[in-house]
Amino acid sequence: MRTLLITIVALALGACATAPDPQAPKVKITPLGSHDGEFCPFDRALVFEDPDGTRILYDAGRTVRGPEDPRLGKIDAVLLSHVHGDHLGDLIQPSANAGACQKPDMSVKTTPNSNSVNIVLAKQAPLVVGGEMQGFFQAKVKSLGGDPNKLVRLVRQGAQTTFGKVMVAGVPAVHSNGLQPAFMAPEQARLFEGSGLTAYVGDAGGFVLRFSNGLTVYLSGDTGITAEQDLVVRGHYKANLVVMNIGGFPFTTGPTEAAYVVNDLVRPSSVIPSHANEPATVGGKLSPTSRTAAFQKAAKMPVHVPLSGRTMEFDGSGRCTAGC
Ligand SMILES: [Zn+2]
Image: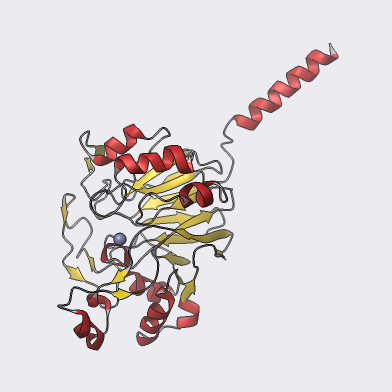
């Protein structure tokens, strides 16, 4: 009888350990794309909100409509994987949902400041960069009246910092990171324009974020397949949610390569595709012929399509519990 009782208690405890706890703290993830409820070509930006209230913006790019975008709210840090215009932000929309999902209206220039730096200055939230980007952004922030020491934080690959209860680590990406002349001061831009050259600002990177509920997110940035996705992102950080670039030719991993990364290298509980460079959805539904659909089919774990403005909630194990 006593053995039976112990067995019943053990089974009950076992069940408790695996069943999701609805009261457990969640991390909120909100995509800030070009068109509400869709996943469109330039969509990269995500806002992460820790249960402690810390809000982190990742790769503002072209789809955050400047610092006044009401979707931003309070922002405590702005992460930037690399300086290419579609991540740093060379253009933005004149208004919400301008243009069509397949061809967003990006007619407002944000050069030479950049959309990211405009947001950093308005929110007084540090820009987090790796490589050799710190010096460039400190000079830019200073030239625009901001405090370069407060508003630019260097986190190279292997290093980490914290915002509130959120740990932010720099991890490798295999990509390029050349600064376009459009972001330079006129006297420097003149030297590069017409030559086809960009300015050296060090390595492109990705990030790992660890939230206070245990959720550990790998943000790939733009990258190819790299062994560090196995050795560093899974081996050391044990990421359980991946935000993965699936755009493919000619820039980064496409659906097949990205599926290999998540299935064989990082092996998270779930994945959010990013940087699809296509109108992946129509009316909020995934187009069956899209590369996002191909990726979803090839990945062995749940793939949650980031619909602009729709907040998803994740528990500490990387499972989506609401909004997916
Ligand atoms: Zn890039």
